[in-house]
Length: 142
Image 1 (cartoon, rainbow, N blue to C red):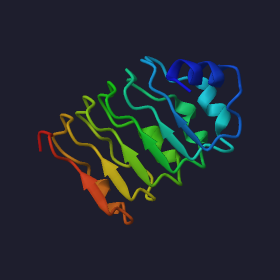
Image 2 (image 1 turned 90 degrees about the vertical axis):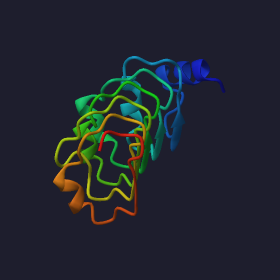
Image 3 (image 1 turned 180 degrees about the vertical axis):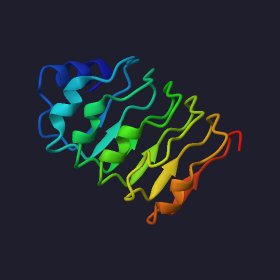
Image 4 (image 1 turned 60 degrees about the vertical axis):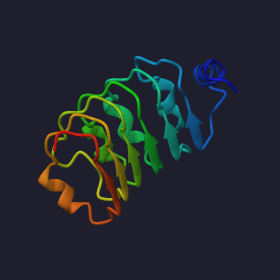
């Protein structure tokens, strides 16, 4: 299924119950229908879009384990990620992230990929990510 077919299927409710969603369709806004998948969605890949933010309701995705937002337009790591308590792998490679707020991530994160951004410092709260095994920060302003 190509990205436009996937987007149409999402918007029409045909993807109810899926565990993985890959969607690269030049999105400039987060499709609210993704939140309707909260009961099942475990892997969300929105790489290669033009997203700048996530909605406040993103935290309802309680089953989400993996979230990729590489090659988008984020300027800060969305703090709403901290509400996704089962999140273990997060990728924001090649965005324009300059800042990361304290406690932007849940303590469950094991892999964090932030390469090729403009990050100047990481928050002290990263030290509380007790499950963190892989932290990729190459290509930043550290």
